[in-house]
Length: 354
Image: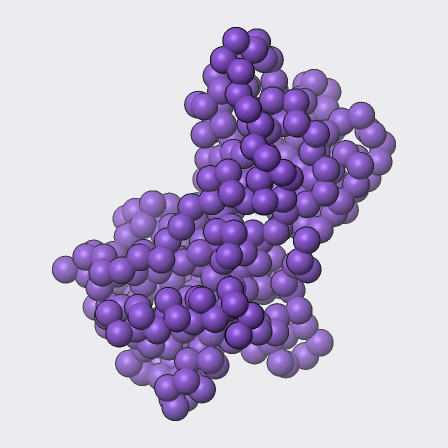
């Protein structure tokens, strides 16, 4: 059965990421009466993008379950032009904390935050730090390096592929790591696995294939089918719901596989759970949950956090049975080398250390 899982280096962040960035976890007082409104503006793709918006909303929901006095309010963006309007609308709703999801919201948030210095904001996938803005970043080049290593180790055709939703740093950081992981596998194992869809060494910022959408599964299907026709047998989409096109195609052949992004594909795309070799996980859920609980407890939010393999802010999800024990052991060794600094990932999209 392809769905059997043989190994795991999946991790969850819990309080670890937020505490690492902000000090000790707040102590809960069962007798304290709280009335805290946490609000969230999605990026394009909405709450059900099966990716980073969904992950962030899950974190908000988890926080509400842990502390029922927390009220959560979502605001969905359909286009970039919605960002400022949605942020302003939530200010008018007297939100105590407003979370902006996605680096594309950086410019809009900078404007709104400057105009509203008494309003507390946070943002996912951005280095924007202001007196009233807390930034959460994730070094997904690290987890994607491991995903690329896995893809190269499983490939029978010697070709693997990746594509993005948009050519933006929060997308191409995944693609960079994936590419570098394949190259490292080649060096270690004297192979020549080729990456279709992305080359970080071409052009000024890298060149590759982009769907120009995060919510068009049909385009994702077309791109994935083209990769398969070109000989790829593993596809890694970094494109939200558009990426569902990849497992749609790879499901047609048991020797073809997909790798998911952000949140474990077995959970976010359950109809194709058996297709995923693994997922390059960005633990937005844990970071957002901890952020909201801390804010509701009255803890000041300043600065930024960076999720890494070491602090469990990023990871790879449990493998399916296409990944054998020998490859699993190699991936675990590579993971430790990244943590120890023996492997240096070159991607220029990586967030700087705290």
